[in-house]
Image (cartoon, rainbow, N blue to C red; front, top):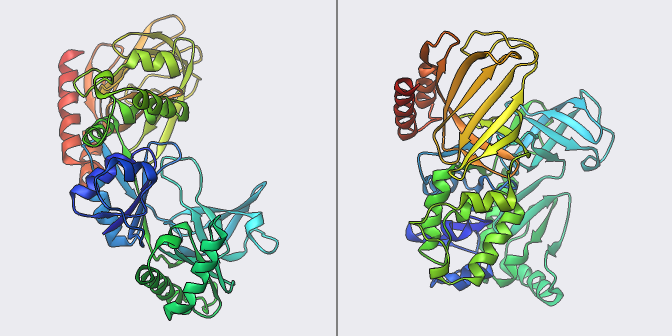
Length: 467
C-alpha cells in the first residue's frame, strides 16, 4: 500500500507505516532528511492529512487501503475512528432544502452539504435538484457541513480528471517541467474519456512513465464508471470512488505517537499534545527541538510541562474556555463557556459557569434555576472530572462526575470524549452510578473499544467508593 502523509503527525505516522512494510510516497523534504529510506514519487492508495484543528487526521483513498491505514492509526484506547457518510469526491444527486447568505443547504440522504452560490453555474433555489461533488469533507466533530461543488472530478494519485474540460494542464510553478509532462502524456497511450480534461499535480513532474500510466488509467476507469448520462434523481449517492475516515487522537494517543516520533528524531515530552493546541504552540515546539540536542529536550520519562505550556499559551486564570464534550459517535457538544478561576501546578483548572434557568440537571433531578453556579475541576490527563452545582444561596444542589477520555486543557477549550457511564451525588448525599446501558450499547455498536470501556467502568467503580 502506498501512503501520502502530511501535517503535524507525519513523522510518527511515517515511522508506523514503514514499520508495517507499507510505502510512504511523495514525502516532504523533512521526512526525506529524517529517515534512512527511499521515498518514491508515485500514485498513492491513501492520503493521510492532519485536520485543520490538529485534533486528528483524515484518511482518504481506496476503501480497502483506507481501512488498512486506519488499523495502523489506531494508536491507543482513546483513539476513535468514524467513516464519512459524504467522503471526498463522492458524487450525489441532491435536493436544495434551504438557501443562506452565501450558498445553499443540500440534502444528500444520510448527510447534508453546503453548496456555495459561486460553485453553481446558475441561480440556486429551494427545491432544485443538483448533481454535486464533495469538494471538502468535514470531520464529525466540526460544526460545519461538507462543502460541495458542481464540477465533477475523479482522482488517482497525481492525476485528476475534470468533467467538462479538455486537454492537459500541470499544476506546477516549473513551466519547463510542466511542458515536458504535458508532452509525455501523449506518449502514455491512454486518452482521458470524452468530455474529461486531465490535470496533473506537482508530484507528477517527478514520476516515471509507468507510474503516470497507472494513475491515468485508474482515473479513467473511475470517470467511465460514473453514470453521468442518467437523469438527476435526488436524493441518492451516485458514486463514491474513494472512502474517507476521520481519526481523532486522544491524549494517550498523542503521547504514543510521541514515542513513534522519538524513534526517529529529537522529540520533547508532549510534542503532539502541544502541537495540537494551536498553530503558535506548534511552531514553538519546532523551535525548541531545532535549537536543542537530545539531552536538552524533555524525554519520555519526564512529566509533561503543563505549567510552562499553559503559562505561555493558556489557559490562565481569567481566561474563558469552551467545554468541548465529544461523543463516541463523533459529534461535539459545547457545554458552554467557563471562566478559569484557579490553576494548580498539577494540571488542575477550576472553571466557573453561571447557569441559565430551565429544565433539570441531568440525572440529578434538580431544577436548574437563575443564579445557579456550576464549579468544574478538570485535571490534565485524568479520566474523569466533577462538577458541583450550587444555587444562588450557595446551597449544593448536587455533584455530577463525568467519566471520559483523558482531559486535555487547550488554550481555548477543555477537550475529551464522553464515555457515557457517570457517577452522581444528589443533594441528599446519595451516590448513584448511571448510564452503564449507554456504554454497553456504544461498545456493541463499535463506537467505544473494549479497552476504553473497561477503563471507564473501573473509573466509575472507584468514584462510587470515593465520593
